Amino acid sequence: MAIKKYGSAEWNGGLKDGKGKISTESGALKAQPYGFNTRFDGAVGTNPEELIGAAHAACFSMALSKALEDNGQKAESIETKATVSLEQKGGGFEITGIALSLKGVVPGLDEATFKKLAEETKSGCPVSKALSAVPMTLDVTFG
Image 1: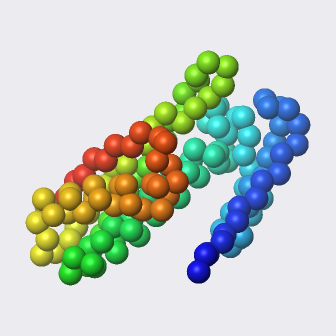
Image 2: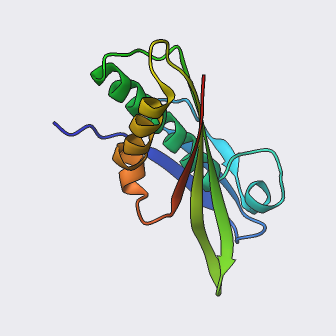
């Protein structure tokens, strides 16, 4: 069974003066503004890298929760931040890395097992798999 979800985007104008709107099927994002200024100048709105980071952090957290349950534990809390790096390369831009930062509290689980499960999840969650061409790091804080 394949699950299909969509996001959509509109764009009007040139790169620097243009404006876009991004929406999700669920309506969680509805005509959210994005543009050159939200991507590079810190203006209010979102950007593709921020959305990739949020999606990756959410997927990783859910996948780690499953891995913990498969191991007989339930997390009290899992907090994941995914920092997506965008750099100018040649004549364009490139996502050059994703740094995952994880904080977890899992009663009854030792730190070594938590780190092992987190490392396995880093390469195993669906969004990690989709982004496998991008170098990823993982920093873990436990307890």
